[in-house]
Image (cartoon, rainbow, N blue to C red; front, side, top):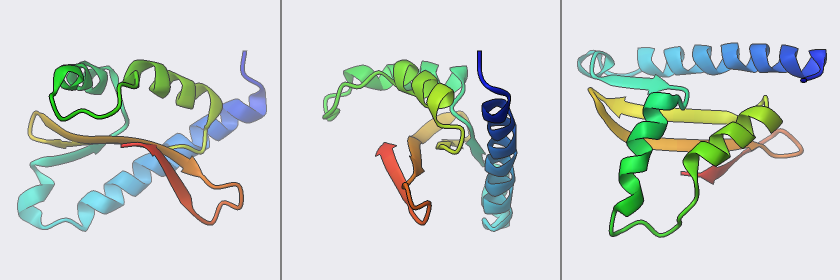
Length: 109
């Protein structure tokens, strides 16, 4: 069971991630705003990422389902992003702020 302070941080930072994504989309050219979606990493994202597991250019064999659930449980201040173009997943990434909170560390791209 998460502590109340952790639950509050989860809610607060989920809202901040959503606001950041909305602002990023609003800065895109109008022709892309309908086609490009910026989202949290969801079950749909994980399903698409599983298709990449057999890609011949894949260099690291980490488990996206395992890492995303670990990040969600441990890092409420995490950076989490899936980029979609129509129904095609283009990118996914996970990261967290550095200890000084002045920079963002991307752990998985």
